[in-house]
Image (tube, rainbow, N blue to C red):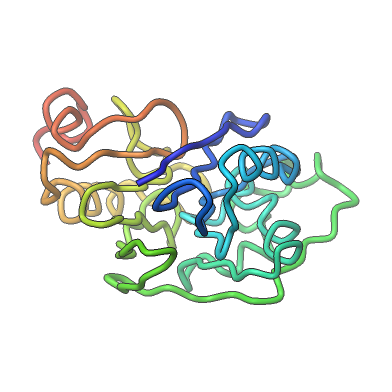
Length: 216
């Protein structure tokens, strides 16, 4: 499996790209802000890849800012949990008016094609098997993506040594605890974790060292 990424300028959000190998089709995860279309194009040229879908772990702008231009530019769908779809058109509902005011003049648009995901939804893309795991807490519609039962794209649910914040609109500490207990901890230790921010890790490492997973 080919796994590569680059970090968006704002908030150092990881944009992950997964494929079975060079010269193949790929999926793109969480293209952030500002518009990262050029950064993505460079990665696609480097590995001779063709994108077929954008997966969105949740609706915060640092993960969705470039979804519409990339999806419509390549004529591919965006896949997002149904509970966070509204944030593509109304990001202020998860960020607050003050943050959105800093981005005044931007017209928010949905991509032309959207696939709404549900918990435990299985699908195949680019020769890889995915499972969408609904894990609310950071946002109502946060999802993690299990890939070939080997990799977990965790978004802002789980980081190396930490977890996503729960104090923004739509966040919930109790929901996050439940997601960690019921959706993260049952996963196998050997599973590689690709987080929304920061370095890669594993379930086993986080089970052992991440204080937020203790005593759940």
